[in-house]
Image (cartoon, rainbow, N blue to C red):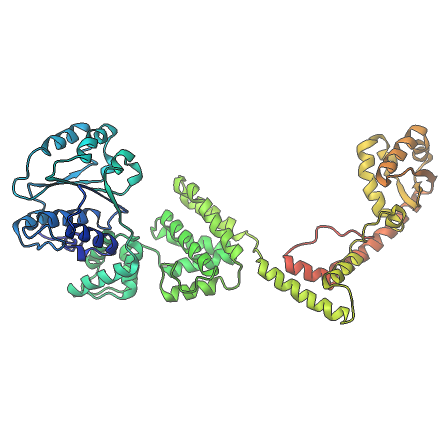
Length: 544
């Protein structure tokens, strides 16, 4: 096979060709010019961003016939051999397959010998974090004080796995992920050289899928070029990559935000039968809701979002009518479900359960909206109170609510409970049930008919047994003790025997009045405004 893939064909051969790492390249070139190149350099960063390529360029820069130079010629014998990977003085070692102590001992022995043709003997150790503990220990002394003709260039994607004793002996350079603009620019240049037609949107789709890796972006472009002959549309890019269109993500998120579980499950089912990876769908949705949250938090220039301008506009439109708290709640639910979906034997069911949960969320009202609505109610109350009213607006609201729902507490027991016999009896009954359960069957036949400063009257219906039972000294003492605790004073108890029909009539009349008052309270404008402001519901209405 003579075909050379794009990732190899367009591998950087000079510092200027390295994409997105200008800060590192300038440091290295300055060090070469000043003859301050460290004997051990560590290049750390994600995959596909140029770590090994930079190490090879450094090897050429130090061994070029015109060097050491920050601009290797790539024409001399040394540069050509290093580029082809056949130089006898430049050793590229894969630490993943040569991780034992024996390989490092052999390396250490070879460092004693002078280079055959080059100025320096260079050891490039890729994925150096894969070396075993004993191998690292064997490398320590040589790495710290190598012969003057030896240079070590180490590369790793996981620097945290390298022992600190090794890190302290190296000059470390952290390479960053390549931003999408640089990737699109580089891919566009390659497409023009190859006479391949692709839109900027298609290039951005490739850049987004590459996740900051130039090598991944070139491999994806290679795949797209094989799919189409000379020209490719945006739809064909999505189809060739097997990725999800942004429109599908917007449709899914719209269904979840709108609480439409059936629509969300239907879309998921279609994606599943089209062969899409459900875990990739989850990852895309997680990223999408993260972007929605950033947009809702007012990211004006879109610098925190890796998306097209039209997509950002669509995101703003999608979250326009919901609060940032709601978006944050949904994003948090997505994030919490990561482990469940990732390790589930049935990720489709796990994703469906998450969708159903999200569509059942109550919409959260933001504090800003609550304040605005309260201000609107305050303005209504201000109009109702009149300009000469001395009370504050919130005092007016409080007064109206209390007039309908509950009177203000008073230290005077008689004032608090006079005319509110049914409510007082309902509050007393649970205490009777707790402290003197034996009397509960008799008290169920009774109603509170009078209440004063230091006495109360209990009317008992049915046969005389119930009244006689309550009049017994032991029963009276128990009732008086409960009332003393409740009213915080000694109360005289008067038990009156009446017809059972009279008891039923008293309860019926009070209940009928309570229903009417409850209806008035529920329909009162202030109560309706309060429900709207706090997005709440009425649990109970206490009738005075």
